[in-house]
Image (cartoon, rainbow, N blue to C red; front, side):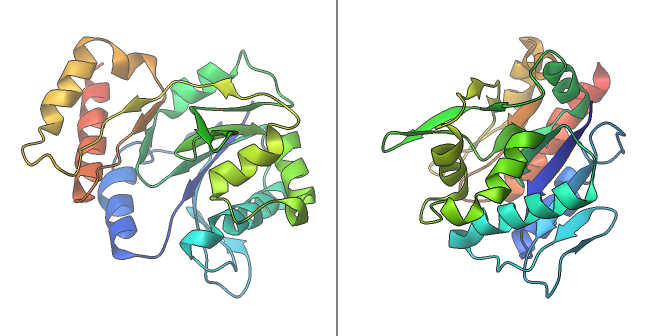
Length: 230
C-alpha cells in the first residue's frame, strides 16, 4: 500500500521558511518508501517534478487553489504509483508511519477521509489534511470541468465527492496560537499532549498559528523532538 503525500505550497517567503525550518527538518527529513512526499507549486510554463516538488502551470492565486490541486492530481496520476493521496498543507506535521498504519484497515476505493467541516450545507474533508483513494482522484480529474471553483478547494472537492461517497472522519490534533494570545507557550502545549498520549496515537497535527507563522515551525520541531524520545 502506497500513499502519495502532496503538500500545498507556494513560492512565498513564509512558506519557504516553514519548508526549510519546519517540514524539511522534521517529519519530511527522512524518506519513507511507502509515503513519497512532494510539495506542489505553480507559476511554471510546464508541469514537471524533482526529488521534492511538483511544479504546475496554474497561478498561485488563493482563488485558484482548486485548479492547482487538480493539475497536481493529474500529474500524479500520470507519473506515480499510489493507492491514496494524502493532501495536506504547509502548516501540518504528518507522522507517515502512523498514516500508513491507519490506512491499512481502510477501503482502497471510494475512500474520502478527513476532519469533517460544513460550509453552507456542503460537507467536506478539511484541506489541512484529507485522504482520497486513487479512483476518486481519477474521477475528480475526469470531472474537472464540472467542479465549482468559486468554492475554496477543499469545499469544492467535498461538494463533488460527497454526492457519491460519505466522508470517513479522521483524527487530527490542533496546536495553534490564537492571534490575540501574546504569551503562547508551544512547548508546554506539546508536553501536555505527549503526557496524555496524543502524539503517539495520531498521524496528523495542525500547527497553523494565526499572526506570526514562525510558530508553525517551532511547533513542528517540538512535536518531532517529543516523538524522537519515544
